[in-house]
Image 1 (spheres, rainbow, N blue to C red):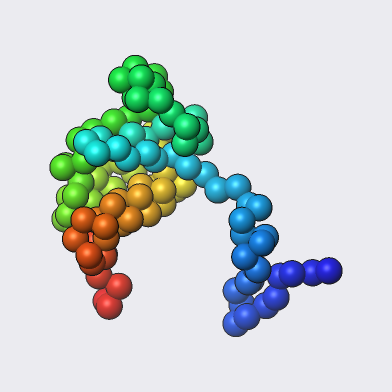
Image 2 (tube, rainbow, N blue to C red):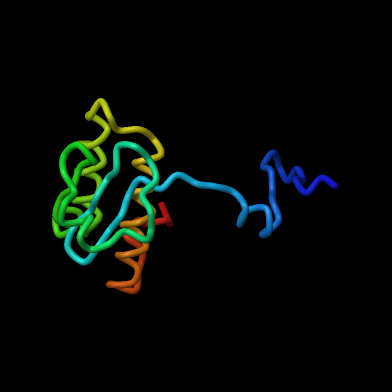
Length: 115
């Protein structure tokens, strides 16, 4: 049984298929920092101790306050795409994670979707 359908050129999937798919997860946010992992997925079951031992070999980390508004986000995206280790999945994960946090904190989107 084929669950994909064509809809104006876009493939659509049912929710059960989406739940089975694996997506990259390069970015983790805690209350204070943004962590970008070089090697791909981090485990959601990270201990607080792991975050204390996060090193530049694991990835890139910076204070969340440095990226918590639209102008700062654009500046950080520009900064990160200049890094030779940065890829599209990392930027996508970063935008989605920052968007989720910003929406919870401010009850609005960080990006203006009306433009």
